[in-house]
Length: 212
Image (cartoon, rainbow, N blue to C red; front, side, top):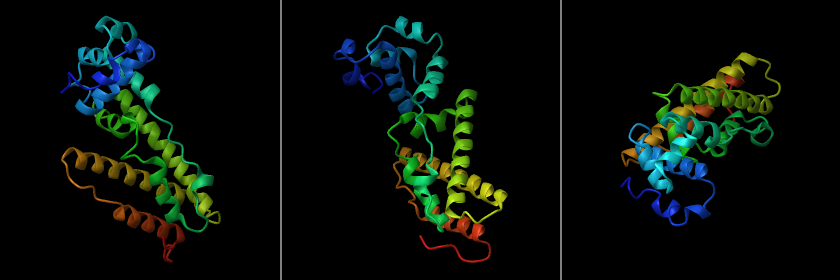
């Protein structure tokens, strides 16, 4: 299967498909997403890209350099626009809105959808990217919550809710990926909506959370 992945996409007229470095990264993204970094050889990447193996090493002297380049160049921006996503008076709706904005489980980028999560276990630079993504999303989520409830002065409570929500959606994305690998149905969003309501209730204090 590895022999044919990406062949029709890259080998028909490689000279017409952009520069060789981009072709190599395209092939690496496809193959690593399907087979994992450890199981993907430089030879298979070069073959899928339709380039000589020596040219791959010209751009990427070590195999790990390919993964580093994917993290640096192919990880899409994931900024959450607080002005767009905040729902005044309804923090639960604001939190739920981040799910579609991020689309972690079905994003078109294989780097964000698969590679980032799987390779973080064994590659420190990938872990650093994952932590950076997490911190940025926590900051953006806190900004959304502040816009939803501008009268809430408890900054620590807002921060705690943002951290909990980002951890929740990261866990859900991982669960979806594992379900896909095993051919199982995904869990759905009901548990995420329930968590959004719980967090919203904590911001409102003892009163009930707004309906979503």
